[in-house]
Image (cartoon, rainbow, N blue to C red; front, side, top):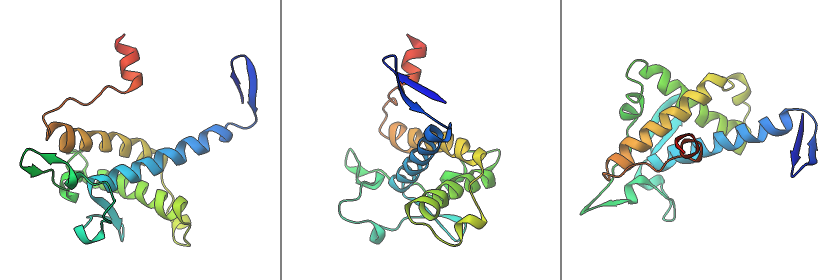
Length: 156
């Protein structure tokens, strides 16, 4: 693979030079978003983050005001219902990306290599996180989600 910037070769090497960091950043962002929504994985299942698990400076959905009330943490049931045709698959994808980001990247564990993330879980979890964010943040606040840069370009 060769990557050029302004006509100059800046990377010459294997495709993994680009794909590995892109996938890792995606998994870490997925973990951050799921934790923001109030979800984590424990023993292979989605669980809600409890208020006592939050640090004072953690960003969390429950800290966003909506009039006189605050938004609610997303429950595991709500997260699984983001894919009504396959709630078990939704949970497996979200747990898989949380495990990969935590046990596979942020801090390596002996357990993680025995159950690595399947690539289809990464794509599915990204779509689920978008749905959950739209439902539980933007819709709850009665706001439209900003267009992603790729969406804005395709509409131009």
